[in-house]
Image (cartoon, rainbow, N blue to C red; front, side, top):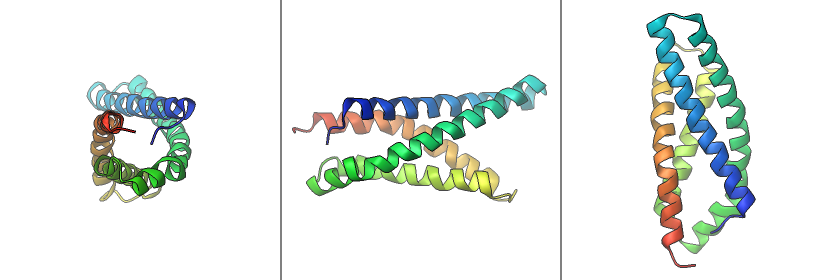
Length: 139
């Protein structure tokens, strides 16, 4: 189920920015632990703020995907496996982001962080695959 060009490019931009800011935060967080430098602490904090802001936009876009793309594609039976994986990955990212932001438990936080990172970078790999699989099916 093809999306309008502007909506499609908005999704691409939001997800690319999320991957880049997530990777940027990961590098800065790693560097601040090694270097012990305040600059890396500030870079990590800024990356996290930008990542969270873009995530709010991505939530709107993913929410708009449900009636426009998900429901129609599900009914037509197209690209169901990769689409289901995409929906599941996005749901896990939303739940773990909520947990990271709102849960203060030091026992749960590292698990949430690793799950969020793993699923986030897996989604970055799955996203182009989902697009490729959808485009190779006849319309």
